[in-house]
Amino acid sequence: MVAQSTEVLARTVRDDMGDTIFGIDAHVEEVLLRECERWGETQHFVLLAEGLDPGGVEFGRSGRGGAPFRLLVDPIDGTRGLMYDKRSAWCLLGAAPDRGAATRLSEVEVAVMTELPTTRQATSDTLWATVGGGAHGERRNLIANTAAELAPQPSRANTLLHGFATVGNFFQGGKELIARLEEAILERALGPWNPEKAEVYTDQYICSGGQLAEVALGRDRFVLDVRPLVHRKLGVTSSLACRPYDVVTWLVASEAGCVVRDPKGNPLDAPLDLTTNVGFACYANEALATLMVPIVREEIERHLGPV
Image (cartoon, rainbow, N blue to C red; front, side, top):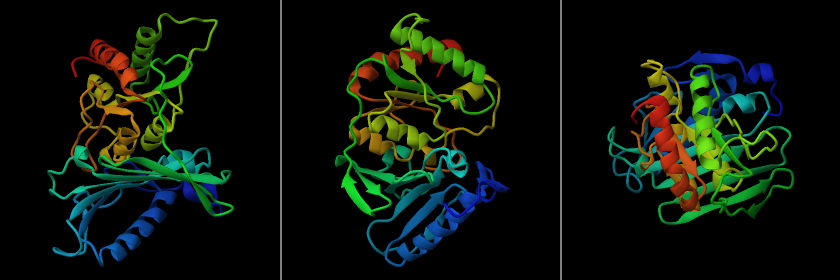
């Protein structure tokens, strides 16, 4: 990363059925496949990753190692920010027992996310979780090559007041609808706008896994992504939005104490695949979720129709 120019990292390599693959993505794919080949010498699993065969790539063979699993990976979530050296991206990994194409996002049992820092950063965070085992982390000093424990600790605030709360509105298409929805949610949660105060803040972090990390680490209180619902409202039948690999580390936020849901308040779920569009919401704690879930659901229905 340090040795590569923005022009090299940001060049378009190909346009797949998923997102655009840039130069920085293509290099990481090679590393991922090489490491999975090594792992396949002792373990049987299927790799699913953005940019690879949508049916998955099998490593190892039946009976090798422990129980077979499906490993869903986003090698770089937040490519655009990283390739222009603006902001960290994250490498996201989640594993679920292999039930073939029927495997679900909600069945992820192990999740790991590692921060991919910009050239100006001296530290990088890694967060991980297992079902029922809590969330854990470490912060690595990249200069001294040392690591210290980093305990995920979401905000305990039961209000959005003086906190970061974001409705994802990154790309062209539906921006006006999303902005109106965001204003309505904030007015319901906080009361009418006070033009003399800055009472709530937004952070358009183009990285779904990074957004979940921000809530798990106590920096944000609420994030919402409704792009699939907005696209449906606009009559678009095929679109690019958040995919299961972008939120495969939902378990980290959940085990840290956050409440991760779909936009209407149900447990987050989707096929463990590379193509399904996913809407999600993350609340820093149960008290905040109790306040916000009905507001979010009702305002989505009012602005976007039944969910």
